Length: 283
Ligand SMILES: *[C@@H]1O[C@H](CO)[C@@H](O)[C@H](O)[C@H]1NC(C)=O
Ligand SMILES: *[C@@H]1O[C@H](CO)[C@@H](O)[C@H](O)[C@H]1NC(C)=O
Ligand SMILES: *[C@@H]1O[C@H](CO)[C@@H](O)[C@H](O)[C@H]1NC(C)=O
Ligand SMILES: *[C@@H]1O[C@H](CO)[C@@H](O)[C@H](O)[C@H]1NC(C)=O
Ligand SMILES: *[C@@H]1O[C@H](CO)[C@@H](O)[C@H](O)[C@H]1NC(C)=O
Ligand SMILES: [Zn+2]
Image (tube, rainbow, N blue to C red; front, side, top):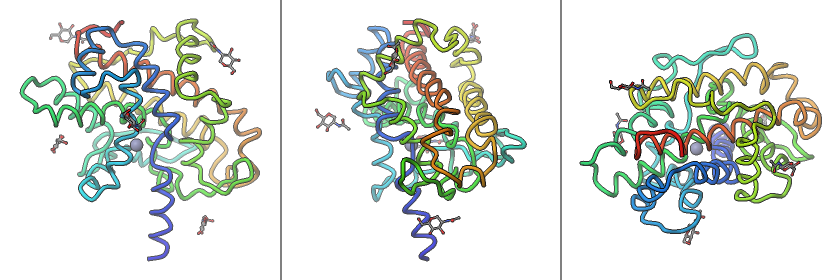
């Protein structure tokens, strides 16, 4: 029981991109939605706040720990039963459990948003889930089963004892943001997307994304994120990350993955909402 409690405690601390990551994704998306999409999203969320998306971007992480919300916990990830660093893969039939996963959740909540008959309260939750789960899907360790998505891989970061999942959710993002808050950091990343900085070509980021096949769209993004588990997150194996302090050379070797995944998540979330409300991905 103690072991279960300890693992539960770790998972609880480490369940998603941290607050900075989710809010940054939401702010980037806010800069890509069209005026019509913005209005539709604000009506569903019953919010005219300037941070209407960022404000609800971590709701799903609070909800899953409420008495009535435990059912939603599996929707934050897809447990790829692959074998990093030798081989990475995601297979919907193998990896999406009976209780659902991030990919089935994106499918379900997209169809609820597209259905004029959905009740307002159901649409509001669907919107809050979509804003959160498209973010989660881009964190490589949310597309990986090994060691509970890295939650039980103990690591040291900037002198603190933590775990591998947690640093990909939080510490790496915070080090990259370098003191910027989510709104500023998102402005910086949005400018980088528009400028094609860092070799980014956002014209390819929606390849394979279509409301005609929402499952295939989300799987495309899951495959891309999962591949980083082999190429970056665990490139040198589990034992290697358990040694040393990961805020140094590990950060330098892999921060570009954190940066591009935050940028893609925000860009795709904005485009996905545009597709739902205007039929066009662009702003
Ligand atoms: C969302 O906005 C409301 C109203 O301004 C505020 O009370 C709440 O703390 C905000 N929540 C988050 C997570 O930003
Ligand atoms: C879709 O979401 C609704 C609302 O959360 C839930 O009641 C339903 O079981 C979900 N359906 C599937 C197939 O996941
Ligand atoms: C990881 O650290 C926890 C305490 O934070 C400890 O209980 C656990 O045994 C450690 N796991 C490994 C694999 O060393
Ligand atoms: C983003 O911020 C970093 C460091 O804070 C800076 O070097 C970079 O030029 C900024 N990029 C943009 C596009 O504003
Ligand atoms: C989606 O389906 C419609 C109607 O079948 C078709 O016209 C459209 O080209 C499809 N779009 C994509 C991106 O596949
Ligand atoms: Zn989450």
